Structures are given as structure tokens and as C-alpha cells.
Image (cartoon, rainbow over all chains, first blue to last red; front, side, top):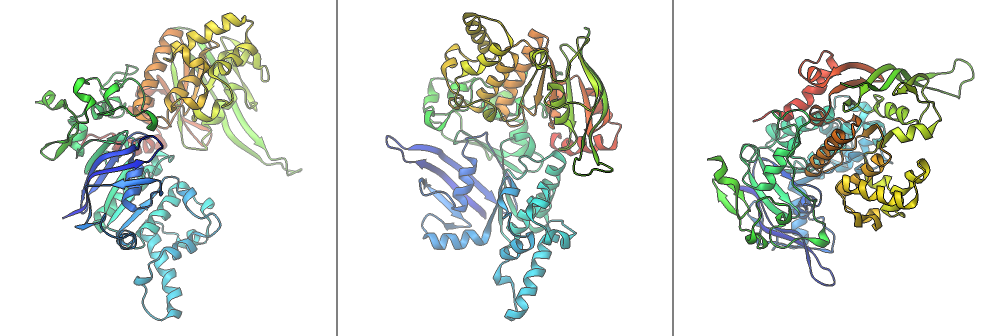
Length: 330
Length: 261
């Protein structure tokens, strides 16, 4: 069964003249136990999409979807309270810059104890305090922090970035979520620490069958860890498929450019040669092009591209382009 | 190929703790190191935070005074404190281009400042030079009257590049200048930098932790850890046959991201 099934989700901002579609008809499906990468450059609306799933968007954003199912429940029909009950039980989210997300004035231990789920505690009220402490320590063990005595007593500024991110993951695990949304969990981290965090997430996925939605702005960083990838550009759906499909045979010109432009992925290209790029820069929200938003930068753009393309499906490899690069590979 | 452009010998930096009168503590951030850079070449400096990468950059541009050692440019010693000579030839680009541009000045005023302070060009000549430099980095002459907030991140990075090359320097230091850019803009920027290097014969010092970029962009690389040089040599040699344990670990931590699946 699909864990989450989103069809044609739009997030719009009402302005005095006309509404701005920050996210324009995006599809996202996730199966249980899947690690899906959500890749897009800045301003592609990937964080907005994640916030819309968790339901923490500001009042000013209007969310609209044809289908927004969580394990078969239509979330759009539920009231805010019912929705919150489901989401807060099953979905957890971690953010970038873990240091900034933790409370600087209280110790890690207290913050963790606060996050522990009451329903998991049993016994009388005088036993609960002790159980809470134990639960916090087991959470720390789960994310691979062995020296729990030191960690529980320290404040966030005393720990490194990677340790703080582990604590954040521990908090997210407190209610045993089915889906963990990781919004750029390793931004501004060093590569050795990045590896640690990704390995931890991968092991959680393997051992607890937890699904992970891994959001990143860089395709090359996540490819090793994901089963499937969804690519977004400027609020529009670009391409979705397995990691192999996206990485080895991208159908969309944008994905092609992303893969080609990464010096890590193309180890064959000679030193100091020119990298392939798209001309121009990412459009701002105020000046979005009509139709396919890649249009002005796309090397294959034609007149048809002023209309937004429909999503085409080739063996569960979805692409949203009038002129996909499909024939190039046969 | 060509002569040595920048010659750094025995450069080191340590801070004294002023609180103790007797047995003053001395923290060494950078052990003595030496290297040479030719024109048209790029040196990459790789290391963790706190390894002294940025200290090298600060010492080279003269923002900090070295404890020992000297820096020679074309055989001429760069005196500490002589900024007139130094900032003509050694320029720097920072990681966060948005915050390094003065928001209350237009692009023309921003680029005019280094020219006024360092050259004796007339106003017309300066205007002409700014126009040419903007075209070199792929911006339009109309952009001169714009303010920094009207540009996107990639364009801001181009403006700070324009500010760096406007005095026709010989060495440009890129302190994580490519890290915060989006992938498609980053490769545009790499192309631009490579073009400029060919045209103007610039030497780059690239401080980065993305080994993919380092491999593509640099000729030589230096691996730093805790202020010590662990390895120094040709980029390809080091990446293919790392000698030190630390370098191996660093490469391994990025290697699995590179693997094709």
C-alpha cells in the first residue's frame, strides 16, 4: 500500500493581482520502507512541499490537491485536529542546522525527555519519571550515541553539528514514526559527518522499515542513499523514477543538465574542461515563466513549451516534458 | 611553463594568550608551510573546519600578520601592512556573496571603490573599465545602476568576482566561494573561472571541501589537518594514491557518493 499518495498538489500565495503558484501540480508517492530523494535547486518548492505534508505551513499559503492520501485516508477531508493527530503520530521531520533547532537554554536530556511519548510509558506516576529518563537514553543509543551520560547533561552548543543532528533524529524517533522527512539534514556539515548521518538514516530505514523522504539541493549527494528520486524545478514536477533511471538515463533536459554538471558524477571528463550548464538562472517567484518553467533555459524548448506539459509515464519513470530525451538512449 | 608567481616560505601563525603573565600559552593554528604557485595554475586547499584553511587565506591577503615566514609575489616580498601593493595583486572571494556586497551602493559604486583607492584612472576610464569587467563576468552594462538585492545568488557571486578581477590581480583566493551555489549555477561559475584563468593568466587558491570540484578544477592540492600539511602534490596523484590515513578517510567519505549504482 502506498504510504503517501499526492496528486496535483498546488501551493499558492494570494497576492493583490493574481495568485502565485509556488508549487504547481506536483505528484509524490511513497511506498512503505522506501527512501525517496526529493531534489531541486533553491526556490524549487521542495521545503514547502515537505511542510505541506506535515501541515506546518503558514496561513498565507493555500494548499490544494486532487488527492492527498496518507495510508488510504484522505487528509484533505479531515478536520485540522484529526489531521494533526494522524500526522503527529506517524510523520516526523528533521531540519537543516540542527544547532539552531534545539533549545539553547535547556540540556539535551530535558529536551529528549520532553519528546518521549506518554503512551509508551506504563506504571504509576512515581515510576514514570524514571521511565522517561530511560526512554531518553535508549533513544540516544538508537542513534548511535554511546556516551549518554555526557550527552544528556550537555547543552546544544557543547556538541558538534553531527551530534546535534543525531539528537534531532532521536527526538524524531520518539513516537516511532513511519515516515521521516529529512529537510537537508547535512547542509553545512563536513563530508565525514555527512556520511555518518546518512549511514544512520540508512540503517534506520533497514532495521525499522522506516520510510525516509530525503530532501536535498544536490543530486550527487543523495544518489547513493536513495531508492527513488523525484526532481523538481521552480515549483514544478520534473521527473521521478528509480535512482538508476534518473542517474543513468534521465529523460528530462533539466535532469540531464544536473547529472552532466556534476564533476563528481562524470569522472571521465578531462581536468579543467568546460562543464555542461544551462544558461541563465533560476526564476524568482515574482517572474515565473508560463507553461514549462524551464522553458527559457531549456536547450530543447520549442513553441509547445508555453503550455505546461502533461506527465508521461514510461515503466514507472515519470517525466513532465513535451520532448523527453527518451529516444536518445535506445 | 612560467615562472613562480607566488612563493610562500615558512609561513606560520600562532596566537599568544595574553591573560597569563608567566608561561604564556601559545596556540599554533598553522605550522610552518611553504608552497609555490605558477600563473595559470590552481592550488586547492582541503581540510576540516579548524584545520587552518581560512587562516592561510587571511595571511595571504594580509588580514592577519604571520608569526614567521614571508610571501613573495614575482620575487618581491609582500610587506605586512603594505596594502597598496598587496590588494592590487591578491584578491579574495568569500563564501556568502550576498553579505559581502554593501546593500546601500549600486554595482557601479561598488566596483568603483577599489579603482578609486588603487588607481589613478579618470572617471571616464573607470566607467569604461567597469563596463568591460561586467561584460567579462557575463553581466550587462545596464546592471551598473542596480543594487545588490536585485540580483540572484549566482549573479551576486559574479559581481564579487568582477570586484576581484577589476584591478587585474594575479592571484585570486576562493574561500568556499562555490559551496553555497546551486549545482547549475556552480558549474556556470566554474566555467567562468576557468575562462578567466586562461584569458588573464590568473592563479587561483581554491579552499573547498567538495573533492569533485577540487579534482576538476585544481592542478595541485594540499591537505591540511590541525594546521599541519599532511599531503601536498599533484591533485590526480593524491586522489588516486593517498598516502596519509586522514586523506584516505576524507576521500572514502566522498567516494561512496560518487559510485555509480
